[in-house]
Image (cartoon, rainbow, N blue to C red):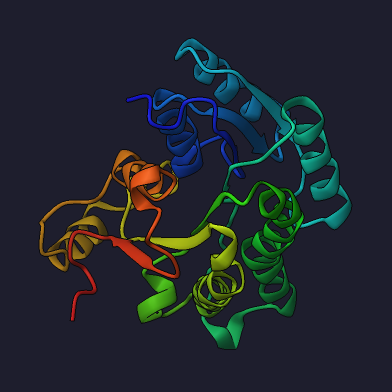
Length: 248
């Protein structure tokens, strides 16, 4: 499990949910993990777990949709470790509503947090990665970005935008030995979904060929693979982790 030993990884939005699981999985595989969240205590808590697994790291509180805060985050990582090998753009949120009822500010918020943050972070790490001629950038998209989802025009647009950005950036940096891929989770059990009524849960599961919800660990394994040496010839790819939900 040491295939990422001494690789320096930044995982945005890693205070809880999928980002938390990704940070821990990268640590299990030997990576130095920089945790990030809007809440300092969440980032610190994840870092404690990373260190309990025997890995080093930093916890940085930052709004990664703000350019100045992203610059400070990246500068802090480079100052301590001298390089950035892996970036997981996981930070994101939702403001679901039918388009006819959706306030403009909810559209702007979701595009800023889910899409602009990934653009800012990717841009900030590119020069250090290009100098080292090595990098892994993994963007957290969604099946909603592939198939669309009613009540999520803002979220679906942001996640589809991540897929387009992934493919375009992959073409730009492939010659520098930097891969850029996306992971598209389906229905994943998190704190955001655990309180849904049982009838809704049953309806959603009925549409999943594998007959169950995914776990945050399912997603973290996919991210860890794309961050590994074994995935060095994979770029511009969208890896769905959805139990077969959108196949075909």
